[in-house]
Length: 383
Ligand code: COA
Image 1 (cartoon, rainbow, N blue to C red):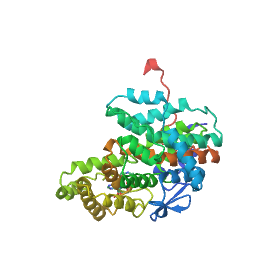
Image 2 (cartoon, protein in one colour):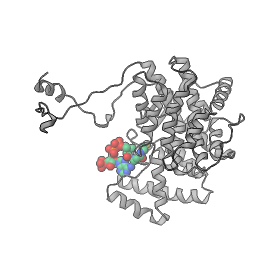
Image 3 (cartoon, rainbow, N blue to C red):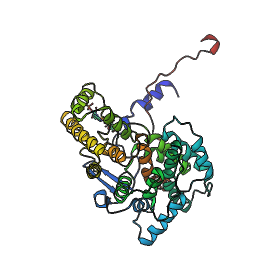
């Protein structure tokens, strides 16, 4: 084809920059309503948060129905068993360099888990449901193991009388969470479980659309979540809150950032045109934890930041803003905020991977070529 013909085929193409508002596939899993609501399989999250445990939502996402008591008991038991990681994974975590980010180790170890899948390359739906169930438990177990090994402590065995979320916090911190902390981790994980075609979920679906395996898809998702424009934002929120020494300095700090056209982490959203529906729940969680001196101080800074950013930019906090303070109150160090996000979003990722296998279409967009044509080739000896 001549250069001129090629130009004719691409110049009519319309680029939707950032794929904004492009519907790349159908989904039944979650609906991110731009008017400020979020639905999992048709249930408004406002009706779920505080009334379900995280395992119910993980079950809902992969089985497309809420479990009854027996189904939940069996699912919980399968999850707890899967929290026991293969020895090779534990050893590999211990051997990781001490200075890399925990998300780097998580990304590597999920990929590594693929080598130890007891069902090999069986990509049938039942095998994928079982694999999804294992991954929902293995990701938080990996995160707990990374942290414990870095502080030279052993990871406690998962307890049969604790569910997944409670075991996660128990294994991470080494001591059983109290009732209030258990309620917080469930709400946090429920709120982070799924969110439409966000960047990491889309990355997982692109990988799954080539009929690649679930570990490859989740590895893609983890790498995508890590970025500060996505799940990495909550760690940056805490960097900012730590940078602001006193509540009285908030105004000057934030005005200065906005004057320099810098983004305020934990604010803005691609889809929501109003407040992120998860924010009020996370703000409420933090308000309940304000009896802790540090949490109260962080909360006061957050309230001031919200006010200033809204006045200047008319944008709202997103899920990552108060999530950072909630995690801090649970005693989670900031470099583990994104791993905690991943430990919850894993249920959404694997559900989307299964849905993508069922859709059975290769996700492969086109591009608009804006480069040159017909350049004369010069052999290397003459360049
Ligand atoms: N701080 C300051 N201004 C922001 C902002 C933020 N966090 N987020 C968006 N804006 C402003 C943009 O500068 C732009 O203003 P303009 O129209 O005057 O140029 C406007 O709001 C639209 O933002 P845009 O970047 O086009 O939105 P987007 O849909 O491409 O990006 C995010 C969405 C989430 C990537 C973006 O809001 C952001 O970077 N937020 C900070 C990171 C973050 O919290 N990520 C977690 C998302 S859940």
